[in-house]
Image (cartoon, rainbow, N blue to C red; front, side, top):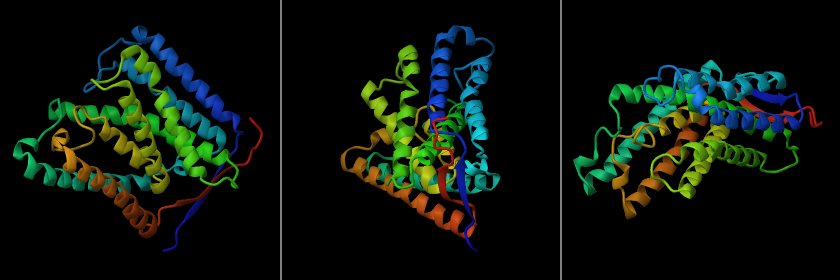
Length: 293
């Protein structure tokens, strides 16, 4: 079967990137200043936010959807069509099955069976609730805003003569994604016991990883699912082994195998989902309006 291609065209000028960023900044600062006012109502299961706070967190998603509509870009255009859901679920599930096999295979000979098993810091029911909350209130909202709109828009406004447009768009969105967490750091502190530099590097690396997964799979559900899994209580990802026991050469081996699995995930997805299943792929992203607005 021949590949279906789709040329994504944004209709507004480059100034809309600035408008979107300003709107996000106003939202982020406003929600921090109104923190006590918004903390009313029952707390959502598996989270630390109230129903009102959860509702307010949809503002960036609404903004991104409105901007996309004004730009003339559909959800399918940014990789959120229904036919991409199952391939994304299968791909991410397969990745974590293989990652657990690798992790268990490394910790079992060195640490023993004590490092294998349930790792989350809450009950299974609350862990599931935490995953659903992270999926809806963090991963979906942030990935649509930063990857679906911002990353795609930056790539679109750059002239086609510029090399590495994809890399520039990915890095730009990742930096903005990292900076978007600054208001929360200033008001609520850094999660856990991490140093500021470590947490900042983790955010930047995560943003780059999500952006690259988006670029190479052209499926926004993939980074959404990986993002949600990375926010699980007590672990980075859906893993059933204690990754903190990996040291020295074992840690290096795990890191290399982790990266190899991610690369394999992309290759297999592109061959099967885009190649064999004939999912629509991008032939390019451009901006028809070269004026600021």
